[in-house]
Length: 407
Image 1 (tube, rainbow, N blue to C red):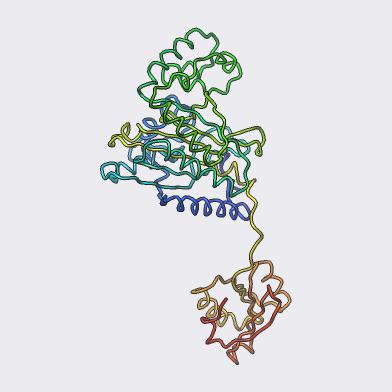
Image 2 (cartoon, rainbow, N blue to C red):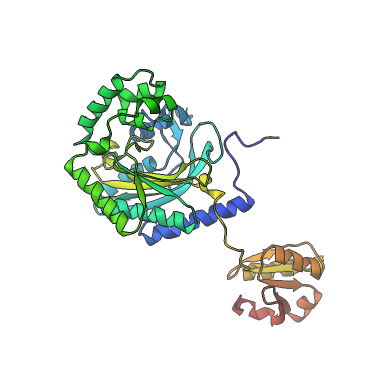
């Protein structure tokens, strides 16, 4: 027997219902905020992720599904969603069109890492990206949207907030941090690599020994330029106005190299140890890095698998029509009725002859609102027996009236 690859799993049955419920409601909320759906390819040129996610990230350094295709192209399965959307934004010349473009997306991402609860090699994300709007109010808008999504599903979280500065304040801070790091002995291999590529990522290290060494490291939030200080203060004021509680985390840097200014994470202890369930931030330089016209941008992504177990589905609602066949001679007659009804209502149909009691049992299992019995009398009289499974009532209608009936 061939099984699914390690770290990759099927989404079936109850879990598939929760997945649809989650993504559909996320999409509904995003559309209420003026965002529209975008879908990008799962496979992209590897260079896209190296230039956007960054060489210092664990994703590019260790986790990408990278290979050479039959045409000799260096390609990778997407490890995250933002890079592909920025590529599409530039390729479709939206960067030159001006104005604000807002997108939401969902789908599978791929990272070769050790599988564990809520963390798979093929996992799914829902995310949004906003292009062309500068300033704290757009940052606040995407945070408010994310807070609304998590609240809708009843997921208790804490918002962590930080500012990563800009090209004005980053160079002097970077020099201070490197000087501090040069004086530390025993940094892990990853931190030594990050120190030269993107030293701020050292603050994101999960190694306990590095945590101890970095206890007194200089913090970027203390080195912000006047513009970054003003925007960060404005963001906090807007969140306070909307009763969004937050904690300042000066060592929050996120896992990707393209962030600047606002960075945020929503963490929850409902999935075990306090862990990030969603996060994002501003990346004003990424469009330009990838060859487009300089465009401010901000977004977030939610790890869907981390939340699925916490999703409480609403009570099933009875809907649709269940068609039961009393005798195998009337399969074709039942199929014609099913085809006609499916133009206006959800139809469950089984073409195995059963007695009325069994048909009713199956209709109830399917959460159908109506049950139709098809047999010799129905074919002869052209009248259909209906049972309302919510109200427990019986009725009869002419076959010619099926399309007009208020299901």
